[in-house]
Image (cartoon, rainbow, N blue to C red):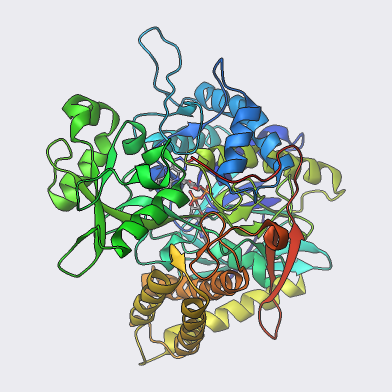
Length: 577
Ligand SMILES: Cc1cc2nc3c(=O)[nH]c(=O)nc-3n(C[C@H](O)[C@H](O)[C@H](O)COP(=O)(O)OP(=O)(O)OC[C@H]3O[C@@H](n4cnc5c(N)ncnc54)[C@H](O)[C@@H]3O)c2cc1C
């Protein structure tokens, strides 16, 4: 076991975490020590795969107000409107800053910035992008800029296991150094959680393996509530059967969705915007087509529809959708210029997450959250495409600035690496060491991978695009059985060094907690709003449900409460596209 000290640790090396690190380094007058901890190398963080673009009102004819309205309507009026207004005001500056830091945005022949109508629910073409590899370029630029600061260190291949609170403040955190297999305790003055989403709870997901929601559990276990956990976004066009993302930019460039009768069926559900309606509407529409017998079926009876790009022509596909082509060629040996692509909804994004205020602060002093792991709430019940990357940079910046301010003002001076860890941190390290030893010492039992497959099947079947109380209650009782089975499960590998089964086990434990919280939150919301569609309550109910769900940890089990949505200028209306 090892103890070290940093003024601030950022858990997560994706776009939100890197952006926060830069802002702290740039805003602290004293040279504070900053660590970016991540279980994968930052250049392999999930953010790298973001394809479609980032949004901001940068052009004549657009405005932050219009961007805010699109976001609020897209979010089915569950967004906190003051947060959205601040977010859309700050977005353009952040996008320009990214360019100054090296992101090569696509440009027109005359050198002006290129924009596109790539994502559903936006009423102005405000996506800025680099081909369909936007996230890759943003991560590269932020990472390189972090390397310019000698007080930003990277703790790669570290798995954060718990956060320690002393009195009313964070005091430290405990992590597993994956390479060496040892427990590390870090004394801190501040922590930012930026660990991204939880898509891997589902079998059919667009998310990377690392997206197991660990950061939400870190916060939940120390008493920070999670907010709006029932709102899980499904992307309409997951490649069949894998669920791999076919970017929305494919529809943004003019792709059609076709059912087994050859119809462009979206005209039935969103007559004006059709394929460019928001994701919740398009995902539901695809599921209705499949359920009503107008879909195709794989040999395994998996329903799907077709995404047709053939009319766009080979040049557009090669230039603007090269990643789509690479994906379909690699996984299905299918050329989208010649054949339509089989698609169905795939889990994509978590609108809910750690309950934070407009500065990304949690209710624990010294603890912030930013990016997909947090719920401000900007996206409400349904996020618009390209708004996630904007949130990562805007909130990375805001949180970084607030942390810097806190570090400057909290009166403590930096303590050296030799500072003794508090008793609570030592105790926490011992507990985590015992936990690792116990997991590694198991000699037999059910495979953790079998339990993970069972979790995937439950979530895909009952906690997906179309939900009902009966299905959700079935899911809840099955998830509780899996939690019980997990306590006796077998890793299959007792080694301490770079033990991926051990990491998979720790992740599974977190995923089982989050699956329960999503399901409980979904059972209790008796209405349909955004991505939460209840077949038994198919209408939105503003009288009873225009409110956020909070879910708290308690020894007796999760406890729910509700807080109002903050409405400023835009009153909820019927959502038509
Ligand atoms: C395929 C795909 C395409 C997308 N395209 C777009 C797009 O075009 N535009 C858009 O706006 N949004 C897009 N999104 C959404 C967007 O990419 C994400 O919301 C965003 O990148 C999340 O960034 P983040 O910084 O919050 O987290 P991430 O990039 O997920 O980073 C999380 C970090 O936390 C680390 N971590 C996790 N758990 C632990 C732990 N226990 N200990 C230590 N480290 C940990 C990870 O290793 C990683 O470094 C897309 C999503 C997907 C799945």
